[in-house]
Every structure is written in C-alpha cells, then in structure tokens.
Amino acid sequence: MFSWSNKEGKKNPELFQNVSDGLKRLYRTKLFPLEDTYHFHDFHSPALEDADFDNKPMVLLVGQYSTGKTTFIRHLMEQDFPGMRIGPEPTTDSFIAVMHGDQEGVIPGNALVVDPKKPFRKLNAFGNAFLNRFMCAQLNNPVLESISIIDTPGILSGEKQRISRGYDFAAVLEWFAERVDRIILLFDAHKLDISDEFSEVIRALKNHEDKMRVVLNKADQISIQQLMRVYGALMWSLGKIINTPEVVRVYIGSFWAQPLLIADNRKLFEAEEQDLFSDIQSLPQNAALRKLNDLIKRARLAKVHAYIISSLKKEMPSVFGKDAKKKELINNLSAIYEKIQKEHNISPGDFPNLKKMQELLAAQDFTKFPAMKPKLLESVEDMLGNDIAKLMTLVRKEEAAMPSQAVKGGAFEGTMNGPFGHGYGEGAGEGIDELEWIVGRDKPSYDEIFYTLSPINGKISGATAKKELVKSKLPNTVLGKIWSLADVDKDGYLDDEEFALANHLIKVKLDGHELPSKLPTHLVPPSKRQEQL
Image (tube, rainbow, N blue to C red; front, side, top):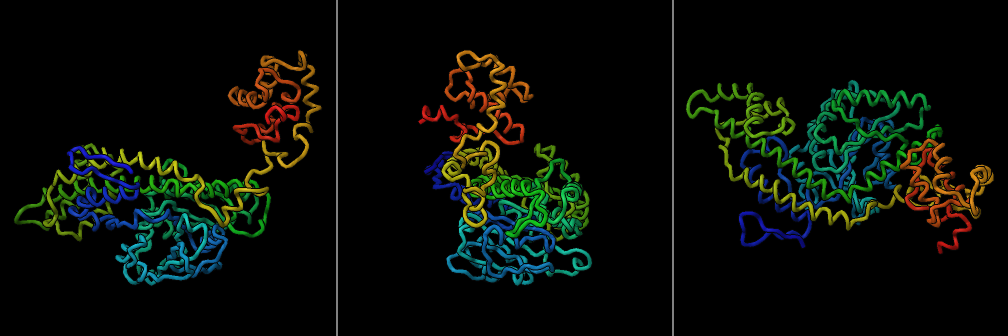
C-alpha cells in the first residue's frame, strides 16, 4: 500500500492501492473541479471516467484503405475476429475495438457506449451516424489479454474523400488518440500518396507524436532500389505534414503470414518486425506511466484554459456592448495568449490551437464564464508539484513487478524462442547447436598469428595482444569488452584458444552484430569448459 498526506494536513492521508486508483482520485478531487468550472469539456475533451484509468493498453491503427490494417491485426493475433473483412477495396467501414472476451461476438456501438466497464462512454457525443459505424469484436485470444486493438475505416482518397461520412472522422480519431498507448500509421509501399483527409487526420494527431509509429507495409513487393526511393519519399511527405524536427520511427516490412514476394530484404524485415513487436510488448509495462503522462498533459492544458476563460470574463463589459466586445476578444485572442504567457510564465506549446479555439469561442456565452478562482488552480498546482511526483514511486514499483515482454501469444510467440527467433544462430549465436567449437574452424589461421607473437609458456600478455587486436580498428571500449570475454580464466593472459576466441569476437563485431554481455556456453574454449562447471 502506498500513502502520503498533503501539505494542508488533512486528518486522513491519501491511501492508494495502485497507480490506477491514485490517478482516479487525483483526477476526481483536484483536476475535474477545475475542468468543470471553466467548461473544459465543451472545448477540448470529455471528462475522464474510471474505465479510462482501468482499461488495458490500446493500439490504434490508422491508414488509407488497403494498406493492410485489418491484415496486420490478423497477423498479430493469428486468428480471425468477428466483423473482419479484408480486400483491396475499402472494406473496413467501421471503427472496430478488438478486445478480449470469454465469448466470441460483436457488441454494437449503441450498446457499447452505455457499458461502464468499457472506456467508450463519451463517444456517445458523436451521435448515431458514428455509433452505427462502431462496434466491439470480442474473442478469447492470448494477445488481447494484455492489449486491445482499434481498427479504423480506411482513409479515402480522390473523389471518395468528398463524400461525407456523417460524423467528424478526424475528431473521433483525436478522441481515441488521447486515450490509446500507441498510434500506428500504416502506408502501402505502392501507394504513398497522402490524401487531404489523411493529412487532416495526421494533423489532428499532432499533439501525440510520442505515441506515433509508422509502418511501411507490403515492402516485400518492391526491389531494394525501389524501397530506398519509397522510404525517402515517405520521410519527405511525413516531414511536410508533421512539421517537427524529430524523425518519426518508421518500421519497414510485410506484416502478414504469407511468403515474401522479393526476399532480398528478409533480414531487414525480420529486424524491423522484431523492433515493432518489442515496442508493442512494452506497452503493458509502460501503461501506468503513459496514463500519468496523459493526466499531466491534460492538467497543463486545463490550467491554461482556465486562464484564458477567466481573462475573457474579466474583459467583458457588465451592461452594454457585449456582442461587439466578444467579437473583438475573439479576433484578438493571440494577444490574450501572449499576455497570459508573460504573466504566468507559460510555454507557448501549452496553449490550444488558436484557430480552433476562436471557432469554439464563437458559440459560447462569455457572460456565463467564471472569474478567476485561485483555490482551484492551487489544487491543480499541488497535484502537479507534489502528488504526481510521489505517485511516480508507485509507478516504478508496478513497472518493476511486470515482465518486460507482457504481450504473449499470436505472432509474438514465433519471435521469442527456437531457431526462428530473431538473430538465432547469427553473430555471437553462430554455432549454438553444433557439437564442435565454432571458433575451431578458423583457429589454424589465428594460430599462425598467435605463434608470431612469441608466446611464453603458451600465452601472450595483454600488451602483446593489444598490438595485434588494435589492427581491427575497433574502439578501445569495444576491444576492452572483447578482452574481458576472451580472457576466460581471468589470468590476464591469452592462450591460443583465448586468442582465437578474441579474433572470432572481433569478426562478430565487424560483421555488424552486437557482442554478448556474457560469453555464451558454446563459445567457451573446450579446454576451459570443465573449469566453468
């Protein structure tokens, strides 16, 4: 159990069983009163509910039609899910929340938004046009025991994007983006055109770049030269839309369980898939920290929003000219932003989008805005300055207690163990299944060098070994690690087997592989194996 008392000396200290419980209490008692008072939910995001803090990590898949979003989910789970449709045409016309359930089936949107155990109740605000295109597919799959996946309709291009969906597609995606742990943008290596609707969607996700990953799918259908050009074109296009100096992480591959059409890049695809899987597998471990981070971002925005609303209220006349003053204040909102920045020392990045805020303010009655209430702001400041910092201790404890690869089953199992695990039998792992010592193959050539170094009693000193090993041009830090691994008996000298091992490890490193932190059993020289037992 985790507990602390606040500065004001409440009689009963805060008692938190876990991070989720702590976040719920802090939100209800300290942040929600500020949001409610200053109409935060009318401008930015609906109020959070208990399910938002209790739900499993969620992965949101976004992309133009036929980029392989549904196939990607099928590949992860190695199982079809209810409502799944795959094809070259725009097949997925609904938002589908793929979640764990003992009984396989579909829950329609209108029933889903009244379920208090699901984190979707606030989607009710988008109306029937959206709810008729929203469902939950439940099935008993081991992957879904740790994460949930949100499949989305294919983003349209050309004339198709001019047809109205009947609901604000970008706003719905933004709602999900605030609550998910990872956003995966999928691109087809054959269709890199980014439509107007897709550009609008990416801009709507602008405040969530930390959650965003990009997948260049179907990359096995093009040659190495074409892939280089496609990758460069994708990075250039994304740079124009996302408009940040940081490069978005792009994973290249073919994410389905079919033979590669062009297998030239097989090793690249395997490494990229492993990196992406590791990223997804880390989500449960980092879920508490993500929720904490999102609450902090929300609190900072709520503070700024309170300053904006109270400033507008302060400028309003008490009797005449209210409409004219309202228009003037909206037009001069940028000046109000600058004034608040200077008065309260707030970063410009904490302020909401100016144009969007002006549009929302036009529909509001400024006379109903509340004046500044310092106690509400002080409560949020106390939450950010004290409560959150102390809650971090509990976050670290929960992270340490959870396995690093919490997502299991489906495609994740195939990359963990056995000869088809990533990197198995390569680099320092080469020869792991062989009876003979793998270093022995090249030992005669290493022996020729060894005996030119004038060994004494069958061994060479560190200084002598250094003169030879530095010819590899590897940094001293790397050579120092190789020496530590090769000096198996730790006597400060290398015999012929240890010298051969050192040269083998140099070859491993020069071939682009990482050195092991501990010498694998199959690399231990035969004469030293009995000593290690």
